[in-house]
Length: 284
Image 1 (tube, one colour):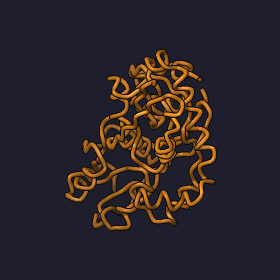
Image 2: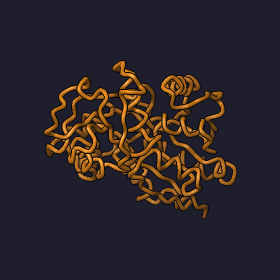
Image 3: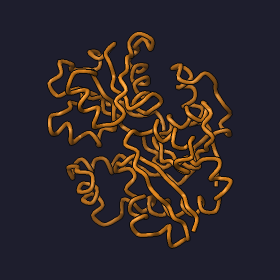
Image 4: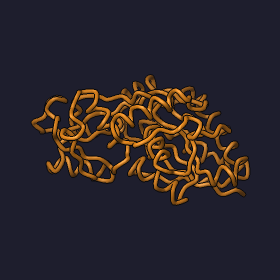
């Protein structure tokens, strides 16, 4: 039995992993795949890949590209979700802030530096022609539950997170979503540590084959909308909208997408150099 550790956010995007694990599809191929939820998101998974706490991460594209530039010994093996991630820009329900202009120069809660909530705050600032040095301030809150407390207590002014994950908080009048900020690239990729690629290439290939079979048929699973609604405490109408906007992938990331992401990160001052696109990928 080959032991492989994988991490991802505990969100609806990753339900396919839960289903294949529940069905013991990896065990049937002599693979002991162990999943770990990362509530802190991309920054925590980048660190876990570096430390060897996990072998595989289902991770935000911009986050792992930045961390590979910064020395993370991992490779992207394929895109997992090819549609953009729709980041909701949230304030406290009773906040005085009504639009994006009101947030210029205000403090953003982020899970950690290098996380999606951190990087996308820069994308949002650029989209709105803010000064990246003076109009962005940050407060590290680690995870969504801490963000709720932080924003509600007025210690930060806004918080960016995947719109459908936070929709129940909007419905419950904890947050108010004042705008969206979609990623300008496919949102999730599968990254694997170089050590795992060397030591367990056949197991990694088998894992990808199993998950890709499931994601290629995901929307056709009977009552998948109700399953998602029940498991992630979502309204069925929101789930159906999310499903209509979300497309999974079974293909490798393009070099053009890597270059686009690097250009954005470099222009925003989030990386200090750019690598060849081939330095980021390992196609299995």
